[in-house]
Length: 164
Image 1 (cartoon, rainbow, N blue to C red):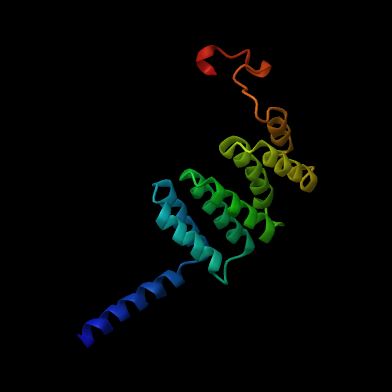
Image 2: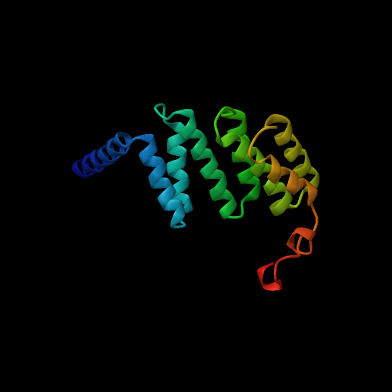
């Protein structure tokens, strides 16, 4: 019995040591592959590992948070997605993922949760914080059509009915 327990502890130690030998980028890539296969729970655990690693730069930690938000959204856990995006904006504001996350907060509120008042606040926050960002035109579009049915919008009139 003692030998079996010792063997199990030894195996767990080896598995843990092997995962520590992977770089944060490798763990992130493995997590992305799992998420693409729809294995969201397994991917989530690996993204959390990246966030917890001391050797992971802020850019990878931010990328892991963004992926956690995407996974939550893919599972229709929209409020969780918003919380992950907000953590990213708060904790890693200097990364390239922060503006995308702020945009996504507004997008989730507008298009998935349908809280248009909150969406407007979040989109305005985006415009205030990132006035020169490449997503400004997307935010302006979202604000222009916030809460409206765009299936008959002028910009879609040139499309055939089957393309709408």
